[in-house]
Length: 320
Image (cartoon, rainbow, N blue to C red; front, side, top):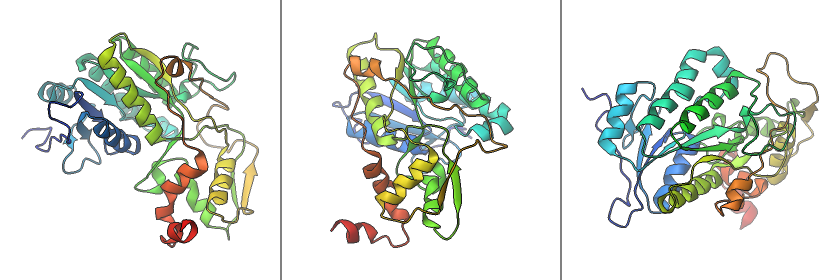
């Protein structure tokens, strides 16, 4: 039996006008879904690859199996691979380090070696958060195993002259609230009968996946014109918020009470160490005219969370 399954997926856009073939790993995840839509809209022929959540119409591939990756790339022959798949939850990485390192480091090494050109999605957690903002050439110094695994993945990608795109905490149109560390706050916002303490020490820059996908599409298109495009890029929204401030902003956007949300001014015990402020400077994207204007947080979060309101007619009621 073919370990890749028989559901290789190619989107519309495979005709002669297509920009080329792009394979997206982690295509069933939060960022991957948005990436596939954006690249398809921009004229690429998209091959969507997933594993644990692979759906009909998705190429199923275990990225930790070198043989499967080799066969996938040889069969599909993509011009570009956008590598979104990762174990991104720091606490899970600490508990299941072998499988996380396999995906975040080893799979990246194999994909970078096989790819004609790879865009590797990385993280602001490669920095320690002690001296922001961080430029593309600043030396990484991760505080936890997740950050170290992504730093090692970056090194593997750069050995093959690929692009590394570092991004901060992401949110977007989730299938379930737990898909994002931002949207998961919705439960705390809604439950106004229960006091909720949220971190008010670590500064974050919540960024919508649609904006990341637009930037990535810009990079892929520019690479078709200019093969010197490679190295490290940063993209981030610029609205600075703690988790407490995110929850308050969500409540404000939906005109909900928020007095029950309490700022926690000491780090919560028992959690994996996280950096304090990893603000990314995005000068390389701006210099090459590849940046996009991030959507304001409140407008973007309304789009993402209104399907999870108790009354889904809320949006029509408020805005029409």
